[in-house]
Image 1 (cartoon, helix red, strand yellow):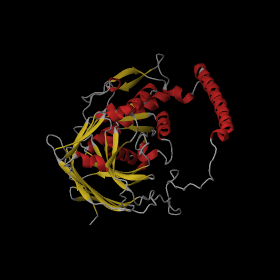
Image 2 (cartoon, one colour):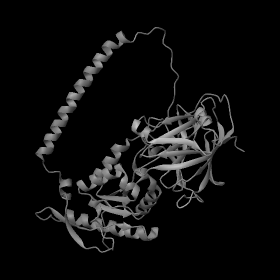
Image 3 (cartoon, rainbow, N blue to C red):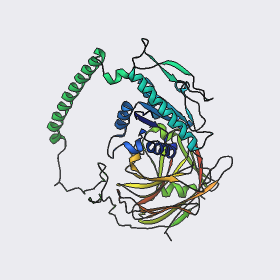
Image 4 (cartoon, rainbow, N blue to C red):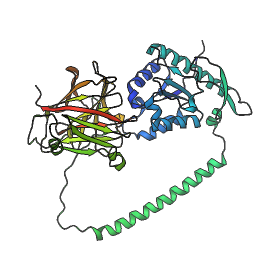
Length: 454
């Protein structure tokens, strides 16, 4: 039996297809393949972009899950470009019909569109093994004088006629030969770093010198309140007490009501709009209005994140938030928020593809929802997809202190889930509306009900 060296395979995917990507990664790992995926392999507290770059440098095989969302994603485009430019072996996985990028069209792919998952998985294993064999041949023998090697081509019909295509020298990457240009670049980089350090030192000296002249205290200093944030350097274990993050204000007023959007002024006066980031272009890409008893949304750009928080005078520690929403499609996301304060909040996002994500969000300045803050996710049985006709779903969350429950269309998805990392016991309530790679986003909220859990 021929044994293959298990080369590291990097999995690239769109967030919308995360559930499929995780399932595929787990199955390949179980079969003995060396798989790198951000959900499993980025340590808590690490910088996301740095870890992605290191994994791309280290991997030999680049597996791309192709869907309209991933092909449109700028992050995926960057990763694909890096993989091709650095001579990685590419394994496209076609999950949904999409326009395949020109640079990938001649590479053989795994087609999951008309197969069961198990059939597609078998094909993926076969192609991974072939690629590992190809790497062994490339590293075991010298390349031809033209610096070319044989790879199989992308073939919708399943034929595997090899073509000779230009590629980078894989052996050279491991041998790291002397390169005077690269050495010159390193020298320039070191010089720039030295100049930067000198400038930073001068700025610090000037700052400490003039600070006493500019800021003169007019009263005795007071000790500011101490806020303890959750540590991100390691996961809590049975021998360590988890960091407690709590909102210390006692609820002052509670209000239970149903908003059916009879008048726009009630909505505008009771709910405050906040944008996730202050990009004016993104703000201009968001529109909402009240019409015919509905709150309607229109997001016409990617990554537009908008939040509505209910009146800050009302702080809840045990509340049920119910939203009736119509016309959610696969690229739309509506979030239900509770325990909002300066320490962060819990957010349960529902996307039109029938999936939920429970997140801790630290602040409105966050540029992305980092997967390390995802607490729980899964599919929603019985979700009503809006495709050829409008469908309505009833989304309900219960936030009882640090305990969260989710009910969709009168079916419990999970109950009494408690985070072991974050303890947000009370705060405001709100909703989130967002787009990802695909847009525009158009759906309508029929009603919002806030009540005491039964």
